[in-house]
Length: 304
Ligand SMILES: Nc1nc2c(ncn2[C@@H]2O[C@H](COP(=O)(O)OP(=O)(O)O)[C@@H](O)[C@H]2O)c(=O)[nH]1
Ligand SMILES: [Mg+2]
Image 1 (cartoon, helix red, strand yellow):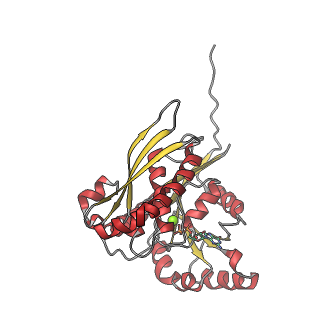
Image 2 (cartoon, helix red, strand yellow):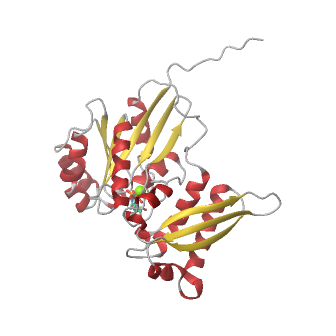
Image 3 (cartoon, helix red, strand yellow):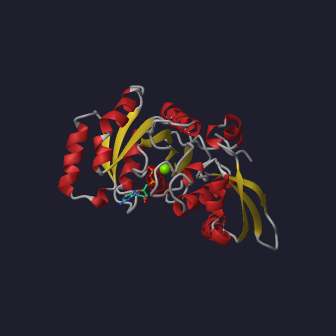
């Protein structure tokens, strides 16, 4: 028997980069569009370090989102790599979604952070503005913000959203779809990301470090999955290393009688189990890698 595969000639597909200052809600927005917690989010800036690809697919379209680290002045090598991740996402995208949130600082910095970036983009790239966290302001305040920002740059679309409550997020997705080029899907339509499971597991652990420690600790921490053993008949075994820069940080991570580290493990295990859909045994070790954030070779090992 001969079967003729029917191709959907109307299929639309393209890349959308999500860019903006730290903490405006870029990762929350991507997660909300994808309806999954793919990218880790915390109340601390600079949680996202690498470009994270999230794939939205439906019957007629595929949007490949690139969630990026926040726009920052790089002070150490790790931050330089973070900026490189932003630039490469910018180059690859058909649509640039600039995200601001509704607080005064974000709006005030718009001219210095967002505008130059958009000016450096190609004419053929579409430029959207997503004004996030509108759950925190009144309608009048929103209208003022739209008024002020639309006078500073000519966007193709301006869309107010609340990534947290999901308000208007569907409309944002629909608007992106309208502008996508005709193209067959770049990725299988049943996957959400091309990153391996291990990456997301290390990110979940890193998120807990961001939640539970303060000051320089989260920024000095990297998480490596040393071993992941699937076991039939018993829990999967995961061994992870929490890397810090100094011995004093190692002590803080572990805490008195290991209490602090235990908390990281408990919280991470819960989320990992939800992510992989089964019970796991999670073992955490803390290691010191002197000044890793400035060490080219170590950073390469860590995937930057
Ligand atoms: N109130 C409110 N908070 C939000 C919204 N979106 C994100 N947040 C919060 O803002 C913080 C930063 O979010 P995150 O997605 O990590 O920001 P990113 O650094 O831009 O990726 C987190 O505490 C989020 O819960 C929103 O629409 N409304
Ligand atoms: Mg983020």
